[in-house]
Amino acid sequence: MKKPVGRLAPSPTGALHLGNARTFLLAWLSVRSRGGTLVLRVEDLDHPKVKPGAAAAALEDLRWLGLDWDEGPDAGGPHGPYVQSLRRASYRAALDALLAKGLAYPCTCSRRDVADAQSAPHGRDPHSLAYSGACRGRYASWDEAAAALPAGRVPAWRFRTPPGISSFDDVFLGRKELDLAGELGDFAFARDRDGAGYQLACTLDDAAMGVTEVLRGDDLVDATHCQLAIQAALGLPRPVYAHVPLVVAEDGRRLAKRHGDTRICALREAGLPPERVVGLLAWWSGLAPYGAETRPADLVRGFDLARVPRAPAVLDSRAKAIFATGGA
Ligand code: GLU
Ligand code: ZN
Image (tube, rainbow, N blue to C red; front, side, top):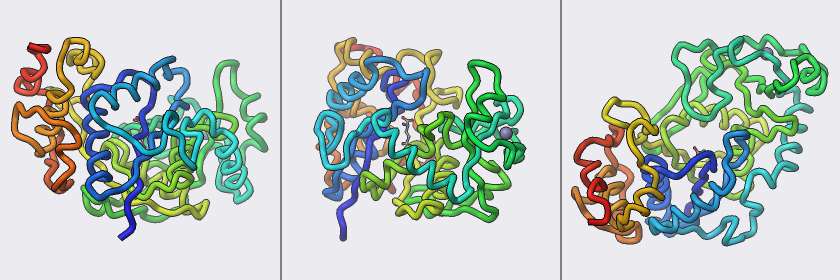
C-alpha cells in the first residue's frame, strides 16, 4: 500500500491552543502510524486576522509538543513554498481556469445580504440561506464589481455550484452527504482579486503538495464539500478525509478566551512539561489513561483512529486539573 501524505495546516491568526493541538496530534499520529510523510503548510491568507510572528510561534509550539514534519517552511521540500501568501500565482492560475470554464464570478453582496458563514472556513450558521446567485452574470470583471462597492469593501469570488448531492466517505464519520447547491448555493471561495482565499488555496495546495489524507476538525465538513466541487472542476485528485470532533468547553461551545487560557505557550510558560499536555490530548482521544505523561512518538505504535471518541472532547474540571497545578 502507498504510504499516506498528510498535512498540518496552522492558520497564524492566534496562538495554538489545546483544541488545535489535539487535532494536529491526531493528524500526525494517523500518518506516522502508517509510516507516511507530513507536510507543514502555513495558511496565512486570512487578512487582517493574521498576526505577525504567529506562524513561527505555532511551529515552535508544535515542536515543543513533540510533533515534527518532513516538509515545511523550515524543513524545505520539493513542493514549496509552504506558506500560502507566497503561492498567489498558483491561485491566480486556477482562478483563471475556473473563469475560463464559466465556473467563477465576482459577488458584491454583503455578508448581511446573504447569511454567508461559508466564506469563513469554519462552521455554518444553521439558519443561513443558500446564496441565491444574485450576482451570477452581473459583472464582467472583478474590477467592475469592486468599483460597485464603497471603499474598503471587497467582492467575493463565488463558485457556480452544480446541482446534485455532494458525498464522500469520511474515514472517521462515515458517509457524508450535502445538497451543496441547495444548502450553500454558490459558495464564496476567496475574497481576494487573485483568488487567494481559504477554499481555493487549501484545495490547490493539498493537490500540489501530494496530500493523500486530510485530517481536520469536524467544523470543516461543509468546507470539504466545497473543496470537492473545486477539485472536480479542476480535475484534481481527491484525498481521503477524516473529520474529528473539536475540543469544547463545558458549555458545549468551542474553546474561546472566556474558557480560560488554553494556549500551548501559556501552559509551557506555566512550567508544564510537554508530556503532560500531550497526555491530556491523548486522554481526550482515548489513547492514554487519565493523567498520563507521554510523548507523541510513544503513541504511534498501535494508533487507531477508530478508538477516538465520537463525542467532542470536553475541557471539564478533570481536564483542567491536569494543568491547573502548573509545573508542580
Ligand atoms: N488552517 C485551518 C485552521 O487552522 C485548517 C484548515 C484545514 O485543515 O483545511 O483552522
Ligand atoms: Zn452577490
